[in-house]
Length: 197
Image (cartoon, rainbow, N blue to C red; front, side):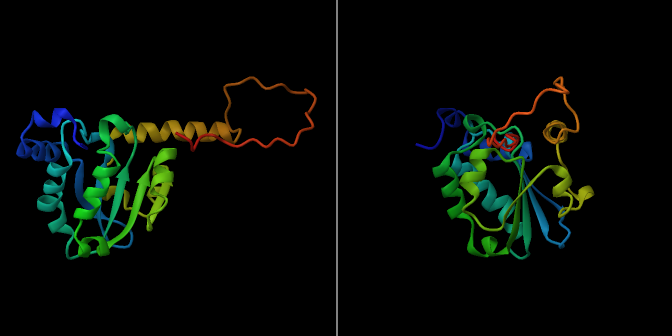
């Protein structure tokens, strides 16, 4: 079963109201191509108390009607997502995808996946029209900054990533350097691990 036991505590209508109240899904603004934006904040989704059927009904009634007649893009914010707390599982995601009407799938122009983890990248690499902007600065190349609400914790995470990126390129370091130390003859290549996780 893809639902958690906790989802039986709330009725389906209460679960739908919770999804609405948390503003996990919000249609707002336009991207730079003029497409409407469906913003999804992944770590707000309470997978342990909202089942897939309630989520599908909420999407069918509240979100899909607004997207049926126009092209749109999705901005999915993966920052802080915990698989056990925020994801409905592979079967749940497949069920949700199958519930999306054909005309709405055809209107989808791009999916911007912000702060993906390594496993997310691998899993979603099979889908087309999926972009991994990585940091907010790259998202703003395609999305109008003032037209979409991004929670503060996303900006904070982005700053942390930016700090680590600066360290990866040697711009900053909190490690002492050994100047004048002999160089090592080696054919071992080093790669940044900042994209894994």
